[in-house]
Length: 203
Image 1 (cartoon, rainbow, N blue to C red):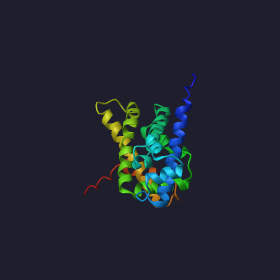
Image 2: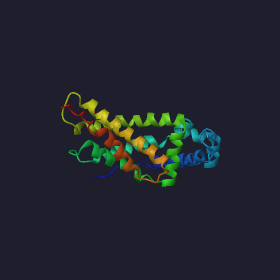
Image 3: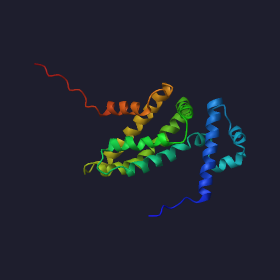
Image 4: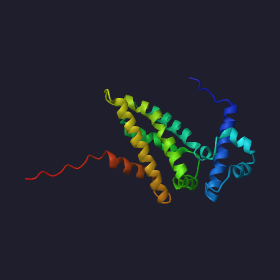
């Protein structure tokens, strides 16, 4: 099957959008999100404010621009996993697509620190990640035993896994990026999947 290529115009737009977002993150990290204006971002990127608004709706959209693309990449990776694989195993493998993103650990740490250090961005980040549920749940559902509650179960698994990933990212940033992110993710998942301890019976 011949793979459909992306039109050059779309590729160019994607590259420009990525460069603008990277410039913004560098400024946000250096000056602080609230202290950086869109005019400063446009000037640093060598474009006009009007051009910047051709790509992003506002400053928050600029800061959170990568999350939608990340969700789509995770869903695409999840769709490639074996159909008989446990959903949690498949999700972990799908989340690892985030490690393929072309960035340095230092830049990733700057980004995550920025996101969780600002209340507005933190809320926006959580909202955008919650939308990943709509992408992931339909891919999880066929992996579950047939049931009239399978849709609910799939959404619950997607929501829990996304929350574990978010918590792992927060802890990773708190520790200065000095630990493996997916070790933290595994710890979070184990905490919610471990059966509750049964009370001892009195003799």
